Image 1 (cartoon, helix red, strand yellow):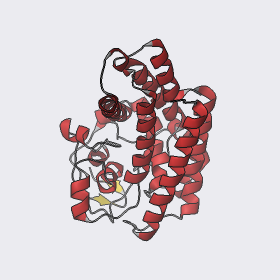
Image 2: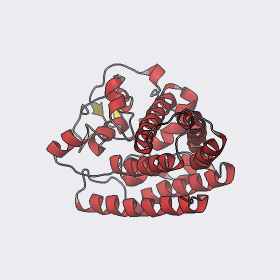
Image 3: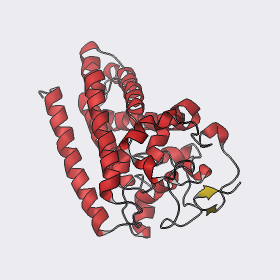
Image 4: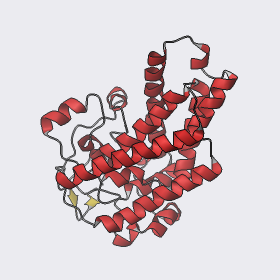
Length: 289
């Protein structure tokens, strides 16, 4: 089957647009929480960051993970290029292993204070909706892509496995950050196979120990396996404060401030090597100690 980077970009853009529309309409019809800020204010920053991220990747790493998969296949690099597995099995294994790497990468960005300074840009959003899943600092996106490209070179998955993973990861990031209400019974079943909005919302709590839980973006199994799973927040989902305690001003939402946020003095005590006491209820959006 003929494949090109142009067709890859078109397919990813089509899937992104379709999923963005579906989840956006879902949020409008069945919201989980009341918004603190208007969509226009937040989406300008979040989608602005997403556009910058795309431009930075296209300029600095134009082949990205799919290009590395093409090169790995042509050169015989990686594990899967040296195994004779049925294509469906290889695709499933590749998606699962790549998802594990994303989980471990997410842990690393919380565990390392320098990387946490970059990742907190994602966490400073005080509302949560599908655009939060696109809100990442450009340097974090570059580091993440380099890690992903290295993993693809080592594993040697097929081009279509990598493309499927990229589309799945992008779609589930918008879904599980979505301001989407699901029936409790549906959520209990779905989170056995997929990270749900209620499951991931806990990760965006202001409370430190809740922020350092539920690291999965796509598959929920890693949190359960490695002991980072938290079923529910201390407070209820509708009223729990979201974001990072040191960054509670409206001006923190602006695109310019998000780009320079990692350089600011106080990143908060959120990285894994600085976890505080057990979570307690919050007063005025700040953690009791």
